Amino acid sequence: MSNGKLVILFGSPGSGKGTQALLLADKKKMTHLEASKILEKKFIKAKSEDVVKLDGTEYSLKEQERRWREGLLVEDGFVAHVMKESVEAAREDGLSVLVDGYPRTVGQVELALPFILSLYKVSDILVIYLEVGEEESFKRNSNRRVCSLMRHSIINLPETKDLTVCPVDGSSLEKRTLDKPETIKVRLKNFRKKTLPVIDYLESQKIQVSRIDGVGSISDVFFRILKEAEKFGI
Ligand SMILES: [Zn+2]
Image (tube, rainbow, N blue to C red):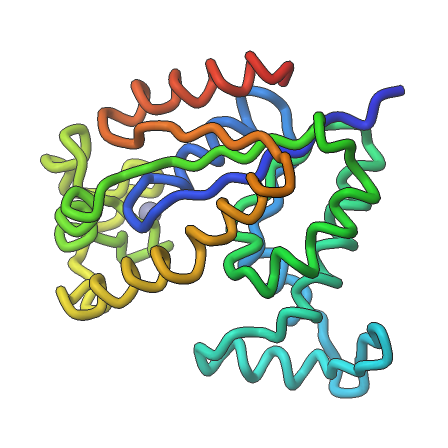
């Protein structure tokens, strides 16, 4: 039995990556591994004595959780361990896996690639990079809203601009204070400086990278992604 393929999805802030990841996983029956959700789940169950031992380093789950709550980065070695566990488990059922939100830095990809390559052949890995120019990204983020009930993020797109309630749960939409121009600039800069080099690194390791234009309606962009995924045999 084939153990499926691995797709790693990247997207600049405001690219609509989250929405597209859900659509792709649903359409192609892939297991969707969203790094932030996986970490959160891990922390919910964590007890104070829980430690993970990795290459001689011990990570306390509660300490990692504290970093997470305070907005600090969870340590690379710890995230690598958690993601490895998740990919291994997901791969067991034979479905293709969609990883979203990991790796985010060159330090992370250096730790991730050895275990990824122990699970998948290079030819079974596809990186999809959803590209949106900084100007467009800025525009979409500065007009972003979130729903009051579930904090669903509604970026500024032609098909969302007239929405007054959340399309999923019907709650009212509000503007996020997080999305101040200075904050958006920092997020864009972080992406350019920290995450873009990850894509270059993967490409330098002979992993296939598909760059997809993220500008357009949700369905237009999704069709572009589908085309790439299908070309790749997903
Ligand atoms: Zn909502």
